[in-house]
Length: 177
Image 1 (tube, rainbow, N blue to C red):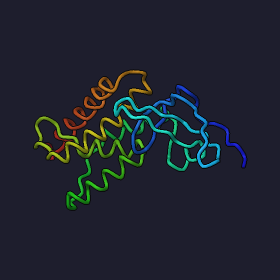
Image 2 (image 1 turned 135 degrees about the vertical axis):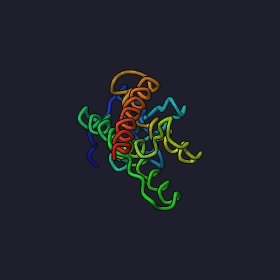
Image 3 (image 1 turned 180 degrees about the vertical axis):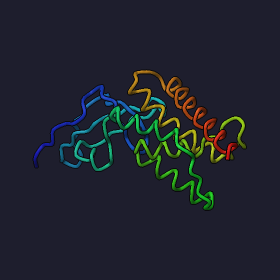
Image 4 (image 1 turned 90 degrees about the vertical axis):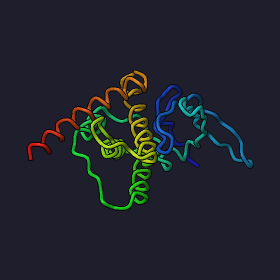
């Protein structure tokens, strides 16, 4: 069996689709059922969780490095767009939103954040809408924070500023129409 070159080093920030941004804290080698297995040990601080991912499975589970600057720029640009709310049942939309968040795709996560955002002058979100919005915006903020070497809170403030500016522009356009 050919040994695949390690694509992540200790200290690298990585994105694991179902859990968001984590950090490679260790490369571990262990023996399971007589087979030697190399593992990435990932630490997710927000969830206080440690995850071990076999090196050979890292690609198939969707583990990746932080997004490029261009991808992040595209995701932040997505936030300025007009929210697209489908007129389907909430349970179906909620499933679609969860699937987008768990895909790990930054632009999809930005779409969910944009679509579920409510400005102060808009009707309040339901509990489940707020939960999904917070999950998406937190996932986006953690990756932005890791890329800008700042904390999640500062990144979230930046995201909310973009969303509030976009909401004001869309509301003015709606009033003018």
